[in-house]
Image 1 (cartoon, rainbow, N blue to C red):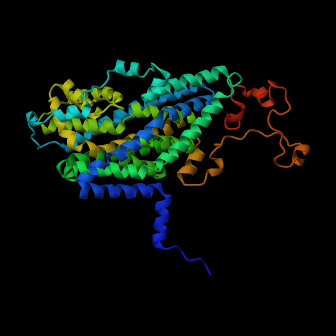
Image 2: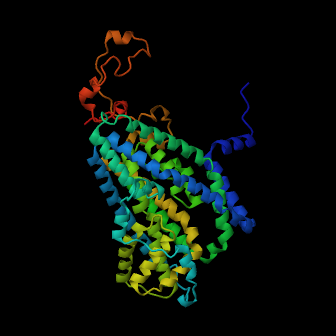
Image 3: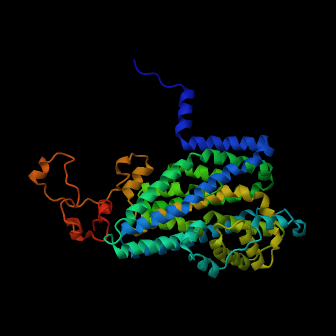
Length: 496
């Protein structure tokens, strides 16, 4: 007699117990309900989301450092790493400029602020000052100088990703220069530290549903659902423009790599939902790095492109800034000429690059843009205070997908992407057998000797056994001295 199928409640309970996506989705709905029904209680739940984000931020810098150092050491070519960085910057500049142009065209076509007839003198600008903390965006020179670390420990303590990246590049270059014979234990130690960090990520991610519940309850409790009615036209326009940009990303990904963005979106659906709930791409960065590596992107490409994108490739923010600038101008009755709109693009191309990690950076960029035009009252940016948090979901998802597509595109451009593995992973095929050792072109095998065939499995002589200390192994003599012996199996040279 065939076994009976489990009942519906049991299936639901099993899904909730095993699926992070289902847990986060339920937490999202519960957060909205609590925020709507008990707004006073909901506003006290802020520590749930903040605590989770703080835990994730704790491990981002050491994780980026380990991944980049191991990536450089395994690639064995610092010039290739430099090419990856340059190609990433080119991709980021093209993508963010395209996002700015899409936002500008969309705002000109729809006119989301027309008919509001707002008097700027009636707006309370003190709320903007509170949002930005009285700060300002760094100039281009300050941005470059601030990217250089003044202290090895300080870069990690301040969670400055660009400074950590520079330190990781220096350490990776030093490991390549010294070779594994002078520092044989350093790289294995960094690899082991990386595994420990990923294990910590797994522990922290179990708290993700609680974080999403708290963050969503606070959002609805503070702003309610009425803000959607007031700013409905602007919200719909921003999300529609983001959808168009993501569609263009899908086309670019298909043309460059042959991969499907929809399948990738399904692959990282848990991380996308978490980013939506917490309004933070940093909350999912460690998991996304792990999944990109599993999907066939080489360590050095993931370690450099993704963290750099968090500072340079804010596609969602670029969309929002261009639409927001024209919305403000239309709301206060200012008609911007074509020349002024071109100025908006040029100013935002610069200001958007220094936004990452600065409180209220969107308002600072909008204020700087309004001041540079001279036609829009700077205080008019207060119009967007009520809708800014609603826009976070659009910004984080667009930023996240833009950075992930950049990793795949640059990896393919540089020959650092295992396409076969990527297709298998995105199709949901089981790649557990190859997870620890990514596929690489097989090396020609030497004919098996009869005595080797006679040896039982497990009786293979350990590598290096029976050799005098310091003696060169046959593999090293074959030209692999620049790569640690324990990594030679993972870094087999590609066939030409």
